[in-house]
Image (cartoon, rainbow, N blue to C red; front, side):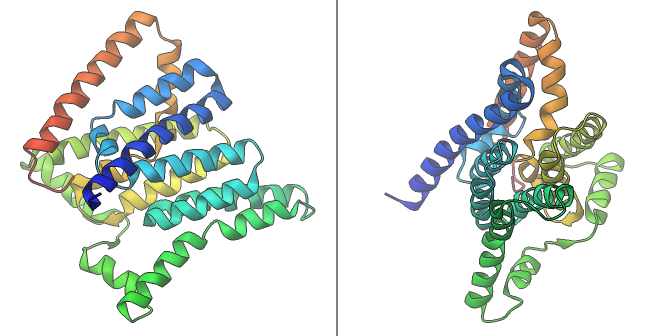
Length: 279
């Protein structure tokens, strides 16, 4: 089996597990109708074609969703173990560890330190995947700065959104590729969705996970057209829309879903066949 075939198989299986995990989280919080709508919205995002490509976003989404579900159901060791795997999958997988640690800190504070050892163990293991990956890169590069050097080679560093703001201003004032304009729309919609999420917040781990993931995606200097892909694992951003669609009339929900499906299909085809900038 070639590396490309293996990568595609992993992505396809991970996408299915991610959809299952997203449904589990949505059903736990708001019921089956909202859960189904949440999964549908995640699968109909404009850049959802990435979910079936050999990228690691689907795998991270699956690990994150099931780790969050484990937190919601009190399975702290499972949550920590899945967060460990998420951190080893992608650098922004540290957002899952942040959710596990925040949830543990809240429980420890609430019970004044008298909590189960599983809470401590889950929090302790959660960042080990991310730390281990950074250490492995350092060993491979022969310097403790190895991971940072690789990020520098890709032009990625923390600039608190300055490069993203410049890209957005350039697109508004000038011209650019379709993928850049779609990225601008997705980023703007994500910020609006984040406001909606904060106004009606879900449980703490989902809030911390989403805030951390959005911060990493938007506050880092990187390819602007790739920001929608970096935001793909932030499925809790879709909760406000899922709640609204679940309450809407069936005809309205079907029409909106059909429009999103058409947009996702057309834009996905564009990304696969015509886009010249990195996805």
